[in-house]
Image 1 (cartoon, rainbow, N blue to C red):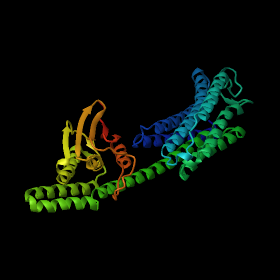
Image 2 (spheres, rainbow, N blue to C red; image 1 turned 90 degrees about the vertical axis):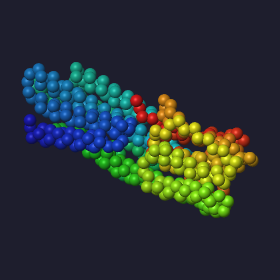
Image 3 (cartoon, rainbow, N blue to C red; image 1 turned 60 degrees about the horizontal axis):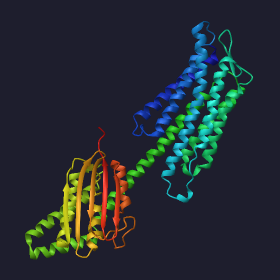
Image 4 (cartoon, rainbow, N blue to C red; image 1 turned 90 degrees about the horizontal axis):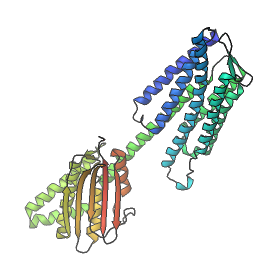
Length: 438
């Protein structure tokens, strides 16, 4: 090989090593099973394939014989094909990335549906490019291999660069059109994948011998990985902080002055009327407060038994206040699962306060659990007046809201919360906690 070929081979080998390191980082990451990371991993595989087969083509060049002849032709074809496949995967990755960003968009008026048409157009162009490459194997007009097994560009070599230029242009248009969904570092990272390969394509069209495209593509892929990972790490930290604030809000919502006053007033009354009952009330009250305080330290789900005990302490205090107007039924068929702390208790509180508590003559609250094929089901049912779970109740208290409970259930154990309420008939709140896959 000539000195230039040795330099090209060195670039490709180091690019393969760098690509392999990024692939390992993805494999050990927490999100390696996500759809976006699978597409990105595909880009890395194509990128490594392009570089490896480019090296193989360099090694076979100039050697005579059947094996070198076949090897140089196959290697060049695969290297060209992989470059097209990388661009197809990049457009798919970019489209999915923008779609994911839209899911977190909080202003519906600013939403723009991510069209699949640009990706489909680019894929069609690149598929045609692959067909042209196949034709070129039999009728060389883009590149050729002479009798000495040496690679040569043909007059229409520029045709092999057009599909890549089209793909990069489409990606650039998408970045401009959907720029509102990108954070600054992400925007810069994706632009590098448009600019670096484009500059490399221009150089390769006019300067023969130096292979810059694969090096530019590898550099861009690494930049995208580093910048996107940094942004995702920052978002995860923000989400963790939001969960912490959520737990604090939950704890505070349960010990508002109204509840403290009602509970302490009940205990004060029992101290005179029934000292033994007052002692039990104090035990329930202290256990209730301790559970709320302990929840601040929780960053993972707790056994359902722990949440159920907290519900029992809460209902014991409310039972003392409402007496015969509050009936409580426990239909617990299973407790062998985990759930975020303070997610069932707020539902029970809603059932008491806005259900049977506002119904003339009171009513019944039923807490039930069961296991089915989908996982574990928790239901909190009341036969009270019913209420709209999406409307904030104006009663002077700081409410954590159903959305808060639903978000923590989803974030911590992928559980789903549904609430059905009918006026004068009552409310049913259902939590479905996915079970372990068999």
